[in-house]
Image 1 (cartoon, one colour):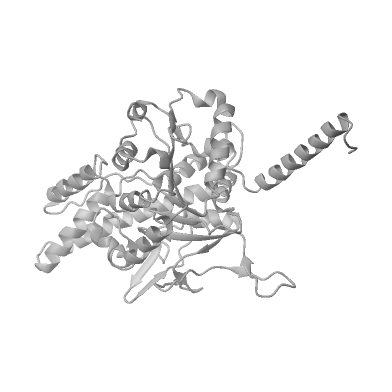
Image 2 (cartoon, one colour; image 1 turned 60 degrees about the vertical axis):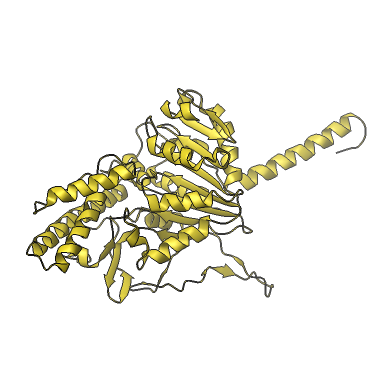
Length: 427
């Protein structure tokens, strides 16, 4: 696959790699290859979906919203150059190139913890600066949510499904699981609530570690909570309730609040204004978004230890499939779990990513892991485009059972008519 990374589009299915120059010119050919393959892969015994920032960016593009910028921030404090140098070093080590706001905040938090221990005079200035940067970041995320929700019913210029329909169809392609299969488990590194909003629109019931109604609290003792029902007239045989999905937000969320010893979810509306009372004045003290995922210490602390245990336990088991969409493979602690998953021969990884050549970070991960037979890759501005993906390549589970039954019926009738023509029987 070495030569494939320098092409705009990369398609790797069943151990075979192709690099079509313009797949949009004949979508039907690629659909016949991709859609049946994904349909079979998605019916694995265990299915997980890992969604990165690319998903929110794709929905922002469809709705005409402005995607949240991850560009570097300014602190205007003493020793800022050292924070920038540390952030750049971390970004380079993870193959991200230039440092973004997550890298900078990671380094800034580390510096703040150190000067607090030293009781240094710069501590108040850094606290105020970090709060200002976080407040601006929260405002950007909320603005992106607002732009998406306002544009969900926006008519596409070229026609086709509304953005609302794309969002629902995307989620349902994964969530529509056979009753004999384990629930879909969605993981996301995003801070926004697009998955939650999309699930509301799709009528999906989300199960996470939060229990309660007014202020749901985070619980470590989840113990595989699920939803079942008992059909009328049947006792002792509960069946899975359809439309149930497990959700884990690996890096926290915009509406998580920490007031020791409680970690709870605040009543912050989707796309709320930054002046909403649920947005705290000092976000670094209470908002549970930690844009310092480069540091493994966060994954060992509460509540991240529980979240990453969920991730590892869900994907690292036999007959497991993990699908990534919009995830750039820039977080080492996430990549490590995926690498461990692929040591199980029956596991499979599906990577769907929008982007132009070269696909450096994905190429680096695939080369390092070295298990191309256990991977499916759909890379490029065509295969990774959300609209193209939903309209042409993702399976339509609500239609598939009817299509299969129709095909079986047509096949049986065809055999009967053949037998009648040979004089063996009468239909």
